[in-house]
Image (cartoon, rainbow, N blue to C red):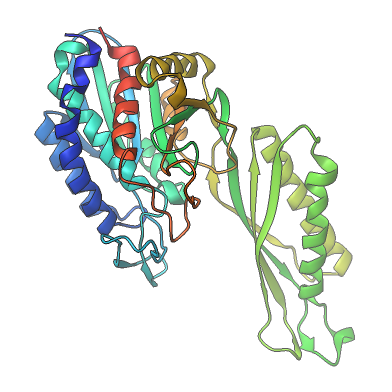
Length: 404
């Protein structure tokens, strides 16, 4: 049996995958609350003959098949608090209570339903054709990617001690580009490192007609917003990538009241961890300096949260997988991606395990047709050939190491 024989059952696998995809799309679950999704994944993996464990809110299936390399394939499983507007006949109408106790709509607006389904399809095909490969295959389904909590949760729950150490880790994400039916790879930075910051600055409340008796935190916050623009434009080299975004500025309750504090929510992105640290240091310096210049009565509070690592693909692994994709799909279906400013927590797993990794893009929209970005309420990649291509890509990448 050759590695190409693994795909002989692809059509029958695709049949149940389409049904499962519809089910997952209609029944999304928020980050770190994926109980039904995890149960479905567990049932499927056990049916395929994997040794299955629940680790840190995720699910891991291990299939040992003789001597050889160990490959870990990761898929994320959570959805977003987004109200779906795709118009699909199987659109989600589900709501849930979030971590703050709010009732919110829930949607697979980032394509994780595709990731789950393709990951399970790959797991089945490999289980049915063990004569074509040897080694150990680890199918890992991770919770909480959208909050950067899931990979850390699995690592903190002893992932490294509960699974065989992989030689390589791989993963994929459905994107607006390349076009449906294609995959895209890139060595080096593929997704940016990111973090969010909550900054609270303090003033002195007063009547709107008596500003001289107060310290206006609105003016202070506005000064900070303007000054922050100089970090990227004047402190980061033009050849480097960095973004500082102020996504929220909240202060006050009425037009004639000067409030006593203001809160800013910031987000940063970079393709280099040193740049990331420079951005954070610049924000802290500017916030403290502007508070001092305004005569703020107390020190600002700066909280870092939702920190994402850099996704920095190993060059050797990426070259090997790219060649396997070209051999399987052909040159015309394999593209070189430009780095994306979005972020992922996937690399927290191989980084914790001390293994190289590669992460690639999977097309979800037909060429020439309207595309929408991930997290948009209308995000609706076509079911096929996306599912089929994603399944083939996962298997092909694994067989680049496990194939006889």
